[in-house]
Image (cartoon, rainbow over all chains, first blue to last red; front, side, top):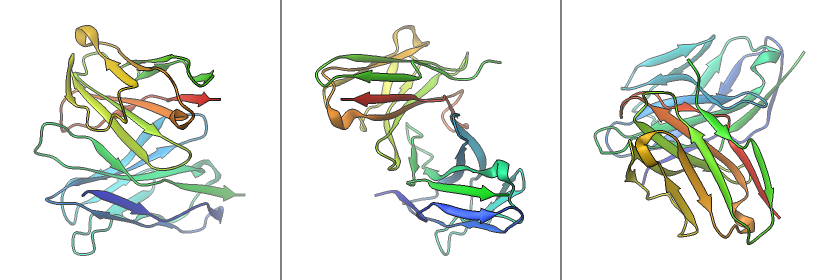
Length: 114
Length: 113
């Protein structure tokens, strides 16, 4: 079946450090891939997405590239800020059916220290 | 434009009681989804409405859970009777079309004692 695996947290970094959160997926067909973020006390927000192989999603300095050969969608940011502290969820959805439900990973807590 | 809203934000109930969660999607969004995150694990799909019809309810854990979307606007998710393992955060999301971005609400944190 379809599934998403992301690295265990928490990830603790100092401000301006480089961030990578690994995400790999298992899916039939050609899923769309997403990163959602949940800031403290708030709901989930879409951070970025990619809908086909080799697409790069980007937003707020974050990037992720859809790699079909390695079934990965790793999240990266060159210089994190304290305000990036949040829980990050990798997710996929399969298009072409009657539903477009999202399948999530377990989430990775990022804590950025000043 | 108002986002997805959920009520209540928190609910603490005893095992065996009934709780009803409400979700108001973004106006005009035909698609409404319920998800649940239990004990810090992955967020899991529960069901999907298109307007007032249940499109996919494959994620509903058992018959203690009942979701409705009368009139195709807001939705309710009732848990009756609640069990300890139902504790978690229940998220609602909506989208205008099937392949478009899902916008999430802040969630309802449910604790069953």
